[in-house]
Image (cartoon, rainbow, N blue to C red; front, side):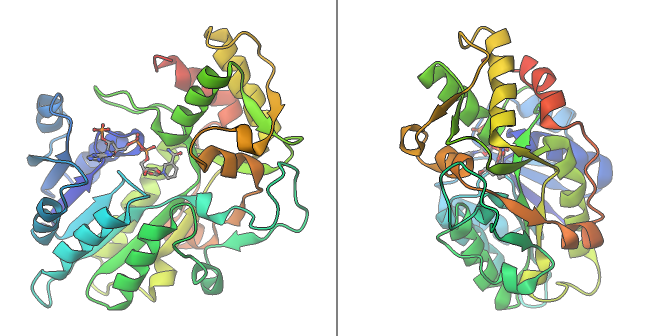
Length: 330
Ligand SMILES: NC(=O)c1ccc[n+]([C@@H]2O[C@H](COP(=O)([O-])OP(=O)(O)OC[C@H]3O[C@@H](n4cnc5c(N)ncnc54)[C@H](OP(=O)(O)O)[C@@H]3O)[C@@H](O)[C@H]2O)c1
């Protein structure tokens, strides 16, 4: 049975994925690589992992050696770190010739924000990215939000030894599962900003459009990517034909900020349920949130729909956020 090395098992996405792996591929030996030593019993007994290896993403030699011993590496732990990605690829590259090796990488649709306008005001001429358009996927580069590892993976995939599959999910909301509660990257950024500012911001008039999706909708496409990697004839097509952009609901930021403000206010985190307009440079999160809040983000998931059968089924953020955040200590 193919062995799987999973990075990110305590995260918002990884916590669901590790359970889904057990349900979908009960005979596949899964190794969880993580630094949190508090959930060993849960991982062995509930998530059914076969092996646990403790370490950080910075321990590149350890990671390369582990990757070398696994058929499929799934990284849902970091979309930003090209050093980690290089270590995984170095390990997979050391596997014997003729042995199938796969990397399934979770990047982010933050790559596909508008490059022309960053005012927070909708740009009627904003580019619409399409994952089924190879020319669009060829534009992925290290200057994009999650692009540095993506570029490394695409280049490695072109060499032909490793089957590379990249998922570009948009911003996620929803609960994690298991003993570690992780709100994930975007919900965490929104919580932190509201605490720092004392209100929920939007930029300009907040008419820029942003796509969000529920964390549970990311699991089926990840499983279908594993299925693709298991087919006899792999990898399928060029590296660009193994890139999938997924999202679910398109909103204007003003609507999203209003919902976060309403929920945060009801939880006593901020004094007012009304979001406030702010200058882009005053959004203080190291750049990610400012970028996402100030630029349109438009894309189509044609390849994900056709090849992975992608179809979101969960409630939209504006209906689900209160339930999602009830789960977390703010
Ligand atoms: N959430 C989103 O909206 C979204 C959307 C698109 C892409 N992404 C990307 O997908 C990745 C995972 O997202 P997420 O929301 O699931 O994040 P998350 O909840 O913060 O999970 C991150 C996971 O990676 C582990 N991790 C982080 N740094 C580590 C390190 N140095 N060494 C060992 N383990 C480490 C965490 O372990 P600990 O429990 O030990 O911290 C956790 O298991 C992120 O890189 C994010 O940028 C997220």
